[in-house]
Each structure stands twice: as structure tokens, then as C-alpha cells.
Image (cartoon, rainbow, N blue to C red; front, side, top):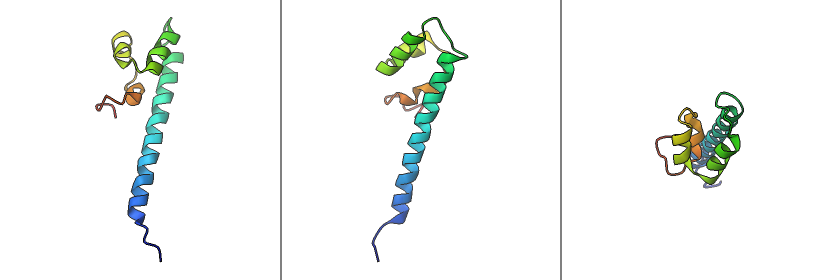
Length: 80
């Protein structure tokens, strides 16, 4: 008999799944915004800011961006 704590394993796996879902939501929101509703004349600037983690600039320049794009911001507990 193994001494595996299956409850702990299940909890860990659920956390991994949750993180994956959050990253997928983030990526989908980012693409939908840049290519659709939030299309701007500067989509590359938007993507550059997001890629570099310049979330303050995103909030200032694109206030209508969906909150899901900020899931990538490790310093923002509000959207985690």
C-alpha cells in the first residue's frame, strides 16, 4: 500500500488546472481585444506593453481593455 495523500495530489492538480484556465482566459482576452473590440491604430504598441509587463501603461492608454488581460500581472492581486 502506498502512502500517497490523494487529497493533496488532487488539490495540487486543481490548482494547476485553475492556473491554466486563467492563462487561457488572459490570452483569449488579449487577442480578442487587439483584433476586435479594442482595435487601435497601435496594436503592436499594446502588445509590446503587455509583453514587457508595462501594465500601468495599458491601464492608462487602454482603460477599456478587459480585466482578464491583467491576469498576467503578478503584482496585481485584484485580478488574480
